[in-house]
Structures are given as C-alpha cells and as structure tokens.
Image (tube, rainbow, N blue to C red; front, top):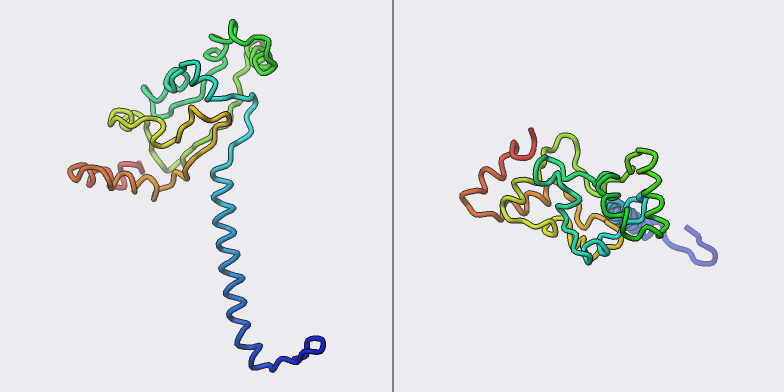
Length: 183
C-alpha cells in the first residue's frame, strides 16, 4: 500500500487493522457510558428557579415540602399552595416569586420536572427507608447545598442492591428478594 511517499507492506497494515478497530469500538463504548451517565445526572430545567440551599439555610426541612415521603410511596413535589403559603410574605419582590404568584392566581399547578424517578416496574417507597433511619442525603446527596437540584447517583438496580446487601445478615435475604422492589 502506498501512502504519499511512504510505502507500507500490506501484511504489516493487516496486522494493525484489528487493533485500530478494537480501539475505535472501546472508545465508542466508553464515550457512550460517559454520555449516558452525564445525561442521567443532568439537572432538568425547572419552570421556576429554585434553590434548595436558600431554603435549607432558612431552616426548611426536606419533609416540609416533600410530605409524601412520610405517608405515601412517592415523596412528591411541593404544590403551588405549599410554596405560596410562605411566599405571600417572603421575597415577594423577586421575579421568580412573582412567577409563582402567577401560578397561584391562575390556579395552575407548578409544572415541576422530577429530578429522580424510577421505572414503572420498580416499587419504591420512602417510608421503610426513613423508618430504617436513612436521611434524605443518603440517596439524594447534600441537596441542602444545591442551588439547582440534580441527581447524584444513577439509582439503578445495582446501586440499590449494593446498599441492600450491606445490611445486617438477618435482613439481607428479604432486601435482596426480587419482590422487595418489583411487585
């Protein structure tokens, strides 16, 4: 084979083709993993700018806004009524609070975009996790320091099982049973 002035014997070139092909495939797989992780951990665009950090610094606890975590399977997103309950008095001159007030006046829910979600075939409840003494930060990271909420982990089956298998031996069989999470 002739490349410009350089002549490379075909047998030598043939030895490098599989190696180069393998490198391209490995590179593509690694890039796919990195991009998939980046998308999974990206912060979704929200209808209102919301800083968990500001609210945490003001002493607002997670369960004040996410009340469902105590009484239902889903922690839930705060309603416009919950938000306006404080913001009829607090920071009313801020543009984002005026947008919030608009939702309230139009009787429209805030179209929050979930930051974390599980597939339909997964059963998850915050209740047993809170009952076991886990804090919100255990799974969601230090949300109280986030100005923009974003996932800190890909909450997939391997991630959950890693924690479940580290529990006391008398609980592992129950926590590793498929029906614990898949109903």
